[in-house]
Image (cartoon, rainbow, N blue to C red; front, side, top):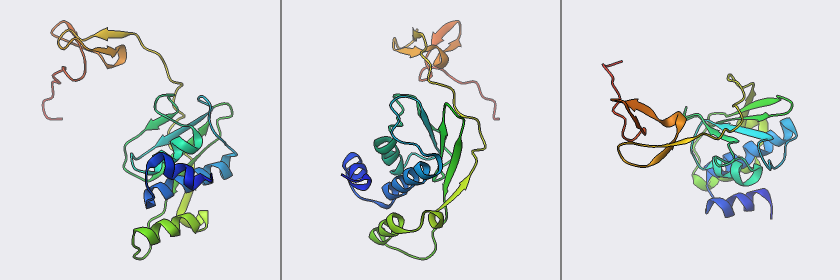
Amino acid sequence: MNAWEKAVSFHGHECPGLAIGVRAVEAARGKLGIDFSGDEEIICVTENDACGVDAIQSLLGCSFGKGNLVYRGTGKHAFSFFIRDTGEAVRIVLKPFQGEMDRDQRTTYLLNADIDEIFEFKQPHFEMPQRARHFTSYVCELCGEAAPEHKIRIQEGKKVCLDCFQDYNRGW
């Protein structure tokens, strides 16, 4: 099974967004010489939560559960890859599309165009994320659900989860 077939199998359908992710993986492999990450050897910071992220999960082994897929919600089709041991990194940014294409044409274009035609390559403008950590859980004194300590707030002397916490905001 080739990379496209594997990504489609994981994602569930063919689409231009998935093609972006498949090609971003290809670009990252070419620029950094990386392969599937069994643990946290490779980290991907994705700036979107679109279809292409499924390609990164299925082809590179970056996942939220392992802690080596980090979401940074800028909405951009940009993916920063880091090699933990060496500190090498690359930020891969989708270039704006030129011209009109339907869904199938765009998918075909993305899968076949020269990699430098569809992506810009930069250095990430942020540091490599920390290793995933384990946190002590506390039970919210309002709803009774457990949450990790870094997501607990103190409100009126009680430990509360983010769902129950009433933020105090005076407009800024």
